[in-house]
Amino acid sequence: MLDFRIETFLCVCKHLNYTKAANELNITQPGVSQHIKYLENYYGDKLFCYSNKKLNLTRAGLDLRDAMISLKHDNVHLQNKIKERVEGFNSIKFGATLTIGDFLLPLKISNYIQRNPHTQIDFTIANTKELLTLLEDGKIDFAIVEGYFQKSGYEYRTISSEKYILVCGTDYPLGQVEDFKELFCHNLLLREDGSGTKEILERYLADHGYTFSDFSSTSIISSIHAIKQLVENGQGISFMYEIAAKKELEEGRLKVVAIADFDVCHEFNYIWRKNSAFYEYYQTLFTSLFDADKGKK
Image (cartoon, rainbow, N blue to C red; front, side, top):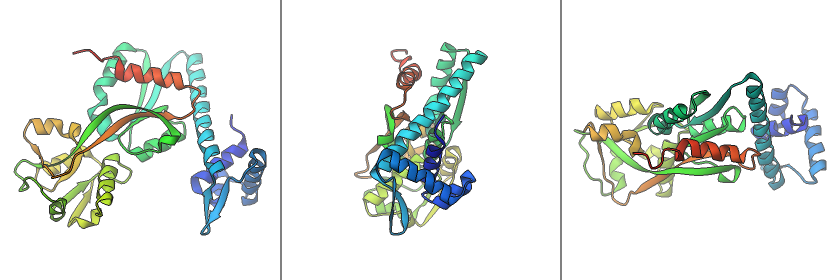
């Protein structure tokens, strides 16, 4: 069980606002300040500081936050495992981003269940941002993500490096692109904010001095299946992982648009909280999910 002052500290970290933390915890703002002051005295350094009237974590605050989030996660995990042992069952709780959950994991999970028929599976599909929050709150044990994450706060194992491509309908009037700016006159179909698929393109555009607003029109759609259907019907273009469009490409319903000097690949990663006491447990799960079938045809 975490000290109640640590719970206060983590709540302030989440909001970076004493008043909002007090409201969520249903205590007074002076009470929040007291808890933070106690921790600063205990650890011997300031945990927060103000810059341009905004509350920020200090280096010591960042270190304490990362350590306590991992400790909180381990505490929830331990509670669940003890309960399972008492009640006589076993489960794994994890999440994955949409592309991974829909196109990479189904066969892996199926094979895992065959080898572990008495293990209950609790599997959540969400975007990278949502999964990191679930992981920090201890609601899932680990996550498999395509998006960016702060590697200093997580242990991770790379599953694969996947090609990132532009696709359009087979009959869509778009051939090889010599200059990326040629794409700006087309309707761009995008995933929602927090999606790793969208973030990769956003970073690529920023690195080359562009933004989504440079496109004549954009459409935000949270379903990759809906995006593929719209693209197939000629409603625009979309960037996605090749693995997500593999079936449609093989069947000739979508085509890859070659772009000069555009060669983007991105890692799919299995992640869990850094400095976890259950390091070996997560390593074993990774092996069971992703290495157990290696060598099989």
